[in-house]
Structure formats: C-alpha cells, structure tokens
Image (cartoon, rainbow, N blue to C red; front, side, top):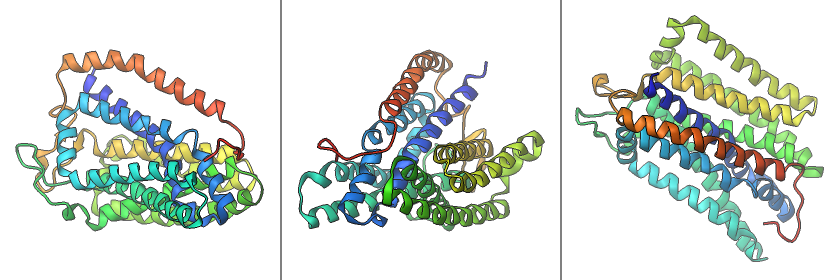
Length: 338
C-alpha cells in the first residue's frame, strides 16, 4: 500500500470538498452586489448563512492534512506564497466579519459598506485560490534547499492571473445555481439570468485556459497520453458542463447544482493527475520539485495519520450532510436571520 499516493488522494479529496462547498459561498458573495435592495441582499446572505462557516472546515482539514502528510510542501507554500496567503486569509476573515456585521445596524450606508466588503472579499478569495493553482501548474522557482527563490510579484504572471479569473468564473456559476436552488420569487427569477451569463463567462474562460495550457504547459496532459483511458475524464467533464444549462432550462435546479459540483471534482482530478507525482513543481529547475515522495512525512507518521483520517473524515462528512439536511429548502427571512 503506497501511503504517499493515498495521502495525495486524501488531501485532494478534502480540497475538492472545500472547492464544492465554499465555491458556491464565494460565488454568492461575488454576485452579491447584483442583488438590489436590502431584502434581496439579506436573502443572498441567508442562503449561505447556516453553512458558510461549516464549509470552511474542509479547508482547515485539508490544510491540516497537508501539514501532517507533506510538511515540506506546507512550509514551502506558506513561505513562498506568504503575502498571497496572508491576503487570502485577510479576505476570508473580512468576508466573515461582513456577514456577521452587515445587519447589526439599520443604516443604509452601514449595510452598503459591508455589502461591498463582502463582495470584494469573496471575489478576491476566489481569485487568489486560482492564482495559487495557476502557479502550482506553471511551477515556481525552488532552490536545492526546497526554499522559494522568487518574489510575490513574480507569482502574478499571465497564466496564474488567467487561472485566477477562471476559478472566479467557476465560483460565480456555482454560486448562481445555488441561489436559484435556494430562493423563490423575484430574486429566484433574476438569479436564473445570472446563471446564463455566468455559464457564458465560465465557458469563455474554460476554453481560453484549456488552449493556453495545451500550448504552454503541455506536461499537464502527459498522463492522459500515457493512459488513454483517462481521456474519459475530460469527455465526461464536457458532458457534465453541457448538462448544466439543460437542467437550468428544465428548472431542475438541484440537478444543475449537482452537475456543477461534479464538474468541479473533475477539474480537481485533472489538476491532480496533471501535476502528479509533483506537489510543487520547480521552474526552471524541475529536479528541485517537491514530490509526494521527497516531501512527505515518515511512513510511521503517514500510517498514524491514516488511522486518524479513517475516523475523522466520516465525522466531517456526517456533520456536513446533517447541516445541509437540517437547512434544506428555500431560504426565508425571520427574526434570527442575518
């Protein structure tokens, strides 16, 4: 049993779970200012109100798993992406504060200010996640000591920025579908228009990023060439994406959301398959790359953590399912709402 591979998959599963769950949170935030009036914006916030903080548990567990299983990767990313990570954490914190503080006063100026803060923080968070992914695909300069040799602004190259916009487009589409699924009345009808526009935005960015990746980062398809069976994954992904507008047209909102979630999982799978066995690619010196083998903890640690994961992951999954079951149905405002 290759524990290195197993932990690579487990970290990927946790981060994919976060991408699905907090992805629509960030998308709702990115679309927040398109809602007009205090009533619509409260409905937007309360659609994610009971679940947004629980969704971020998946990021915490994913980061904890990365720290335990691949400490060198965690250390390199935390130091190399220091300013980006600090900015991301600041955005996530400010976003949470905006949700909690927005309705504390009835002042229109107060609420408008927090609405802008909530939306900007959500957009920035989604974009920065994409920038990190773009740099992991493109590669970053690493020394023989596994230390980052570049600068913050060196991380903001065109491919990373393009990936950031691509991730933002996915979140906006995912979030728009969630709003349609959770609301009713005028906001529900308005959100259907958002879905159509977000799908167009997403498709443009998806095609553009795919073309650029094929031209400038051909290593991302090496495993697909070596194992032709893997070509089924992008084919299924295209079918799933094509199914989203179909389900929206037939007003099967949950199936559209499910299709969007599956598309995100397949994106994460292709990302993992493309960089494997690397976790942090060194560019321009590939021999300095951090892989699942040279950057992992000891076998004993991996074995112990695997036992803990077998106990802990079902608990996290059960908690998530129970929360979504309890707060199922359309969102309604009451005295306890944000």
